[in-house]
Image (tube, rainbow, N blue to C red; front, top):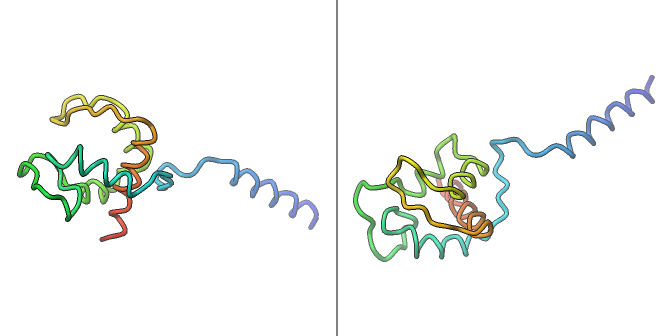
Length: 116
């Protein structure tokens, strides 16, 4: 009986370890600093991307990156998919980013959640 329980528990633990993380989990493996550098040069005309940006963006044009980071539906998968394809129906120009750049930008955006 105990042996069956131990085997069942081991199977459950192995299955849990093999499954991908939950959709809402944040497991972006990008470089936060590289992401900040990228957004300070490409996104700061329309967004407030950091308190330290040199020029203010167009007022009211786009949400701040802090606002984006704290939206409950913004997960790592959602943000990756959003940044990886053209943005139909919104005023945001499509920036062709490499997968590594998307991970860096995502890591930077999610780092803003910790600054609540």
